[in-house]
Length: 362
Image (tube, rainbow, N blue to C red):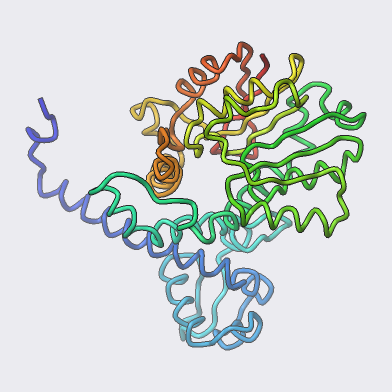
């Protein structure tokens, strides 16, 4: 029986949802404006200026004043900024100054709002997929790797030495002495660039489907003079067959496995490529495979939405399984078991509200 179909909503309930729906519209629009504020440097300009007019902020950020003035209207109505009674002098509210403007030495979280704009950019293509099936390829997301690099900086790159590598006992010493390392789905390779600079005796490899991302990563490695690091374009859909046997001591995959066309093949390939005493460190979305258990997830709505408009669809575009970002811990463990892994530890880190960290051994 459909409970929703048998339930008659009272006028009060409809009014409550009506108010909630208006909030949804306002907050959705506000997210786009926050993304614009981040990309244009307006939050940094506002934090630096304190109290300022739209003209002063436009001059500070080197932007057109008319656009800045309208943006300030959205920020003020959205409670991100406040203004004087004349509506001409503006300032960020204290919490926003810290969280979005990078105050008190904190990293700005405004970059996360870029995901909302990215979803809107491909909406027409996603609607078409609802009708015809299939998916939207990586090439349709021109800013994806740029946004992911911002995300990776805060969840992986910055805390790499202090929080991530210590999850694997002895790995820092091994990296210092010299081992073979592979990062699967490396994107722009920020984590590898950092490790290669810190551990010159080890040899690092980054593989990704994106030619653009790997090219930029290789160019940065060359600029930094890193001779122990190499990036390659690799489609890992058949990695279970093509993986070099027992070639790597340490393999990483940061927020990458669920995007693959065939995560089962990729994980089987990683198992094949890992040395018998090697370790696989995997960061992936922290969630349950049962949607009913995700209803209280702090950013569950955002993650399912991103999955629908990116993670799931790019996999389906390659004829893949389309497991999606919210494939969850249960399915993750099932895939790892099927790939031949027998030791799986799951960790949660304080700095990251959206991911689990798995330490995996043969």
